[in-house]
Image 1 (cartoon, rainbow, N blue to C red):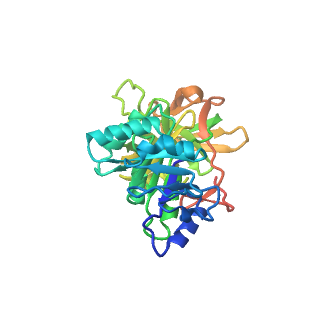
Image 2 (image 1 turned 120 degrees about the vertical axis):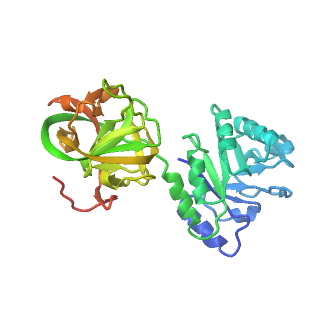
Image 3 (image 1 turned 180 degrees about the horizontal axis):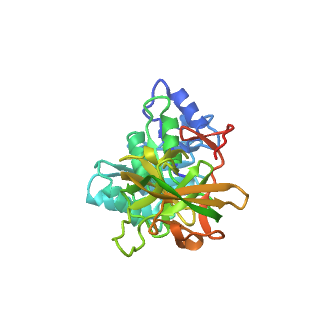
Length: 368
C-alpha cells in the first residue's frame, strides 16, 4: 500500500476539518512544523515534524518522525541520541545533478527520504528509485495535487513509496487516499476445468492493443458473465503465419466483461477506447495497470468455451474461432482455444460481487 502524508503547514481556516477528514480516511501521516498540531491525533496516524528552514522546536511533542533539511541534517546523530523513540529522515530539494546525487544517497541510507523535485519531468525520480532498489527505507515524494500523485505512484511501475501533498480543501485527503488505493495488487486466480466448447457462428470480437509490452505469462481477464473470467494471453508467443504482437490481446466477443484498472470496476470490451485502463494479470495473480492504445472490432467466427470452478460455479468465454487465439493454463501453459477439450485446465478469476454499470454491488443478479 502506498503511503499518504498530508502537509498541513500552510493550511489555514479549514485545518480542523481537513485533519478530521484525513483521520477518517486513514491517511498515513500528518506533516506539520508545529508539534501542537499533533495533539489529539490517534496512534494510527504518523506525526511527522518538518521544520524546513526553521529552528527545530526544543520539544518534539508527539512527533513520530522528524525530517531534517540541509541546515539540520548534520545534527542527526545528536538528535537521535537525545530522542531515541523518534525516527529521523532527510529532506532533499532536487534542482541539479549534485542535489540529485544527495537524493540518491538519502534514498539508499535514510529510514525516510522526503524529496521535492523542481523539474516537472519524472526522470530524476526514476533515477532515485533505481538507485535505491535494494534499500529498506521509504521514499516520500512531494506532489502538487492528486493528479501528480497518481503519476508518482506509478513511476517505473514500482513508484515512490509514498506522497506528501498539501491539501487545498476538504476532500483532497479522500482523493489522495483513493489514488493510493487504486494501485494494482494481487488477484486470487483459480483453476477452471473445461466442460464443453462449441462453434457458435459469426459475431464481432475485439482485439485490444495496449501501450504496454506483455510478458509471456501475462494477459487480461475476460468473461461472458461478471462472476467468472478466463485469463486470455497476449500475442507475445510466436505464431506460424504472422509476427508476434506483444502489445495485443485477442480478447473475445464484444459483449464480454474485462477488469478495468481502477477500483475493481469492469468494462465491456465494446466500451474500450484509446486511453482506457485495463488490469494486466500474470499466472500468479500479480497485476498492473495498462493503457489501451486502440481497439479493433471485426466480424469473425466465434467459439464458446464453458468451464467450471472448483466450487461448482460455471464460467463462459466467447473467443474468435481460430487456432492462434489462446488462453493461459496452470504454470503458464499456453493453450490454443480451438484445441481445448473437456477436462483441460485453464486459469480464471471469480469476482464475488454482481455489477451495475461496471461497479461491484450487492444485489440479486442472474446471468446465464
